[in-house]
Image (cartoon, rainbow, N blue to C red; front, side, top):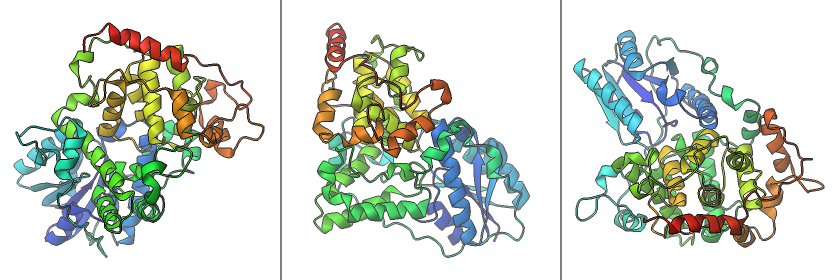
Length: 470
């Protein structure tokens, strides 16, 4: 049999990989390739660094199966035909992506390869239910989460596919570039050494993380997931974002716990479908990435000044409000942020500080190692009021009452804010090791007074809302 070119993208695993399974079933050698194209080059600092770590783990996993991962840089429309010519491959397989830029790229590649007489085949990607397969009774798409959950919760999810014991390779491999030469972690600078301590890279560690969660924190997930100072969440978003684990693997693990009577299991399944909802909206309303999902917000007078003192204080964790600052520092040290923290910092930026959600979205895109285009966009618009939130747009979270409710023992604040502590923990001090030196901050700096208090910010937001007709 002639070779099959297997194009890896954000699916850095060998388990539950439909394109890999199909390539092996086709027979003949498999040539695995990862392409550093525009989809990679335009990533933010932290997501790009984390992708490099994931590619390295995939290289090792492929080598353990007796094959090699070929690395090439350039546009896929140029790189793939060249590899086909070099290797004699007659089929190219890959897993589908669902963001507009990737879909446009994939459609172009598929059309070009088909015109060459090659088999170009894509397979279901990193979702439980592809967006076009979920419809309302009238044939439309869901704009509210709960009806979508009710529509899919009883659907069958196929059992995850096993990893192969061996991946046959060609007699002669095409040349490969060096991963280090791509410089995927360059923009992270000294922050990479800090974030690396918290990342859990690769499919093997993703499976370990899932097992630890389902056997431990899942039991108290209903209440534990809201307490930022506790280890009460799965943290699987980091691995899901790069396809080191699949939502189907998580779903079946959750279903197994549901059948055992684990009280947190259904909430976990709902969170997996919340991620599906983000991609459902992205597919049907791709403008959610760049424009207000609700057009009535287009004239809202948000500030878009990225150099403003308020935005600078927010992104550097120096607002003077402990919940906001602790969460923003957690982001810089770990590359992630507790989900309640994400909600509160987004609400504070867009409502108390009257700053456009696009600035916050872009900052998260640069800093999150679990960055996901659909979830990031939906989360920001949900918090801002311009997105698919069923609650009233004038809901304004109070960061002071929120932290008293969910961090009563001050564990989260102490974990991330060093100023004022006689013996701050390593996690709080690591913030000053991770940030750019140009910020001029140290643990000895005085903790700032609030730039905009919770009460004042709420009044500002509500006064603007009263003048608008939504």
